[in-house]
Image 1 (cartoon, rainbow, N blue to C red):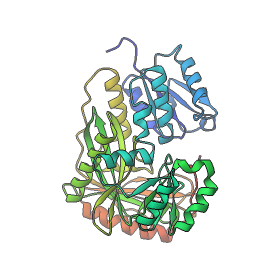
Image 2: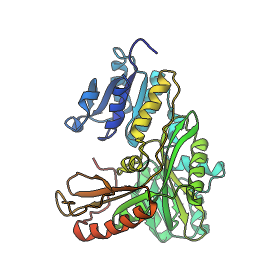
Image 3: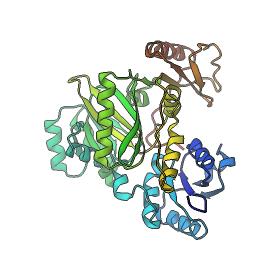
Length: 401
């Protein structure tokens, strides 16, 4: 082990990753946090952060390179970790500039750019919805003539369902492209596939998947984000054909895109028309919307902590020992709420293991050794949430602060 402590620099444009920093500190690391000024008073784990640095934003390449290079004069930085998806590119840029191990700019593109990840997946034989880059107009016209509507126009670098537009006819596309102007090349057009959406949350170490849990959304996130509704997901039956197929596909995606080490949140859709699974997207991060808490409720594995253990072990030249998960099941239900601070005291089933505490939001996680019990509680709570709390807002066109 090195005589000096391992130093980990965390980038955070949004407030998340507190458990990652806590675990790094528990492992004896020196923890540095670079975040944005508007989050200076957020609930950061100050007891686990040795130094905190603020910038107006983490998007200006040269400004961040200059700032972190200046910091490197006095800090021997061993690892740079992006705590949010929108920090992935900047982290890779800094690694390249400072020559610090980790995912570089070329590889990170496959985990941020929806066009890049689709092209690579298709090259490796992984099923993806038919798509076309918004570049050459003749190719777009050919696509519109041969791939039946509806389609979705997707920003290549956004997260979740942010900025996605559903199109029913070719006539809808061209005015939107005119509106986008020079930004149109940052989009792709893809066949809209109705069906069930799933996600696999996994840990990869030295190119090998060491942990993977498959889950199914109750409603597709696109429908929830754009049409209103409740966000809900839950663990799939262990050993089922769906679970085996999805974890195998997720491992194939990780290999195809060049994932060496880290965590992945990967989404698939099962077409209602042909029953096949299609790869939708992946991200080199823990799942958002409190999925990490749901995974922990089912397995005792906290993905933030495991990611920290993985990064620190590699930095120290030590072997990473993957977790031994408990075999359980969990489900998550979240909704916007009419009330500022919703009261969930009437929800008193013993399977509730977590409650969301956030203004104008309501949420619970249930856990049980029985998947049937989780499958009973989640839809029941969705019905009750709709009656007791449910509210909706228009979909955002870009990431919220």
